[in-house]
Length: 312
Length: 312
Image (tube, rainbow over all chains, first blue to last red; front, side, top):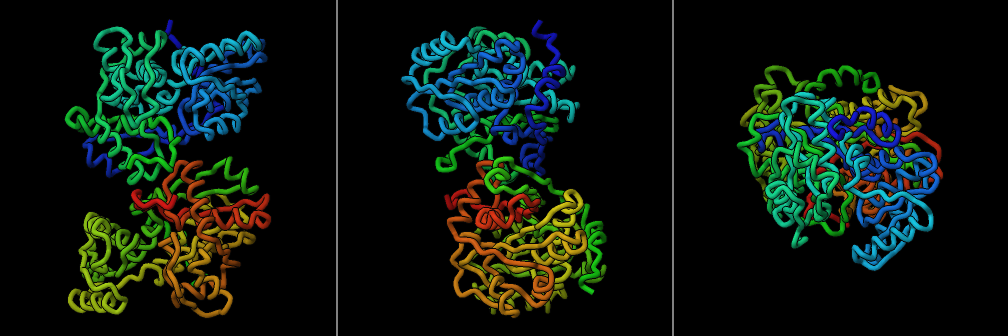
């Protein structure tokens, strides 16, 4: 059933809620990589990240009755903002559980997009308890940031657009965090092309997905010591089977490689991208021989960074 | 004669040497300004700045005989790189005089684009002497970074493209440095529209153009104490008459306003722009009443910044 999902239909559903983001190229980066790279710039997506796609699809797929009761999630990252904005755009209430330790600026961003913030102590147990309390009270529907099929399908529309514009790609490479983006991408690539392969890119420091692909079961991270703070989350039972089936490989990269790739993108492409977004380019530059002379798509996942805390 | 220049012809001449840069918008920046702003993104131009346009036009307008002898300029900024790349693209030798005090990374960038760097002591007199020596030896043609009609016409093609895509603009706003960009822009706007006005934006700290427009003669800066390091240069006898005739006003802004506008562009539009580029947005945010409900074009002049030395 999953492999028969019509991503084109998903794309049509969310198209007025998202931007069709541009695809950029850099002669310089093509030169140093030896590959022909097409960057799908989700940093230019609404609220600054691909998460808007999955959030929009999840909200729009609710029945009228469920829409009226609202949506709830727990997140301190991009998904909190994405769900708030998607819900607001569709006239749906959004309840966002955030750890009290989250930066005030992030809470403000969620409120700015119309989300109602509920603070809780910073443990997973407390988060889930707080979300359940909201569900009991409002009847709102819980939407997981990455382990939800509607979210996964929505995220896949970035690669769908990329393959529409560049149908001859040999590889599409995305960062791997909670697994929503790469699972959706892998489905889109599988449907769009016989030959194109989906590859994941992950920091060595949080290589749970790499190890999960090796062992065949969902592994956890023991540390969270990476500059790519969007990639510290683990896979889930909805996205892992898709990843296992359709992702050909996960390439791991070192922290200095991520920072160097991020700096290259900022300096040469003149765009602001998150560290997580640079992980895919870092993988290409680490394994040049594999990609030499190939046509690559890279999903630039987002551009929400704290300019006061840049890693270079 | 100047006002009869056919910028369309200039544009056709240089079109295979430059990118047609995208125009970006931001709902957020429209919201806080109350205006409808179209950003012409010359930070995505080849070598990262609008200077590529003027350099290309100057090089391509040379006779075959002059092309063989090459071009020479003195610059430590974007024009040194632009002239090198334009000349290389046209198969013309480029001799660049740079002060020995210029950062090694800038000399390397010029060499990377094929320019032959000649170092000299860091005074205007020594620069001119070094350039003259090269001219005497090679017969190369001197191209001034901003006070040269072919350069001015080339710079005007950014606004030409902008007005082609957005013919209904009320104002086009550019930063003012040496005067090449604003003079070319003013010519393009004058030819494209009856009603659209060209406005300059300049730091209070280096407000030579503001004072020149007041006094009717070219004024100099007494200090160079601005974060917008591209705007410290003075106007010249070729561009000043055009500015005097076709620029309706120059708005001055304070240093914190420039830095705040730059941060807004980076954070909200996810693009890397130079401090000089932010001066135009700073002017709009400083004089909101003037621009309320109007359609504005802003020329984002470039994106070449030192990521290690950001002002925020």
